[in-house]
Amino acid sequence: MTALDTAARASLVRERLGGAQRVVVLTGAGISAESGVPTFRGEGGLWREYRAVDLATPEAFGRNPQLVWEFYNWRREVLAPLAPNPGHEALVKMEQSVPHFTLITQNIDGLHEKAGSRNIIELHGNIWHVRCLGCGEVSEDRSVLAPMPRCAGCGQLLRPHVVWFGEALDPSVLRRAYEAVQKAGVMMVIGTSGTVEPAASMGILAKRKGAFLVEINLEPTPYTSFYDASIFGKSGEILPLISESL
Image (cartoon, rainbow, N blue to C red):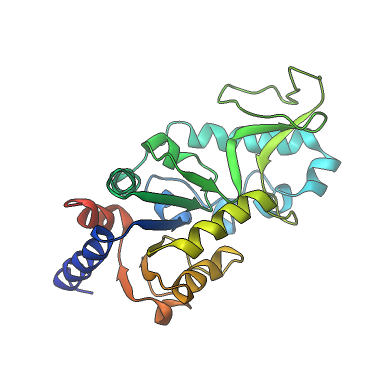
């Protein structure tokens, strides 16, 4: 895609956004990668001799909660100094310019909130939040956690408030996401391959309900043919082009 193509498509998307009352954005790992967030998966995601997919499970936590907490504390240390990038910041500007804006993210790094986004639905939770296994209290804690952190209220063990492999998404969170998607006039899918459900089908649902559907990704995805506009490249470069005149 040439710079001219990118500019023309960005202008089209900006025009659509300018006339939209309700906008929904779905983000994935791609937007965070531009801030230096590692994938924590695959060959490049090894921690000690373990794979992330072997530690981010309720079974692993049941067997060895201290090991899982060591892994998550290490992840928190990696993420703590990272800053939002121009893509995150462009979405903040977009939210301020649209009457009804909802940001749905698959990311757990908290960078959207750090950038200033407000109406955020975190499908997979947030690594800076903890949940008590006893009383169920959820709270934000960005401090250096103990190897086996415990609830200040009831003394029971805490766990990261994230959705692990093998766990279902919170039904109330999912319901809010679907409600927003079905009302969208424009929906943008950014930095995700769109192959993992339920997020994968949200764009298709939005289009079936009449939304103008936009994709911003480094390369084509299995759903590219369904989009009304696809722009390939870094979201940190493309989103500022879209939001600059909103």
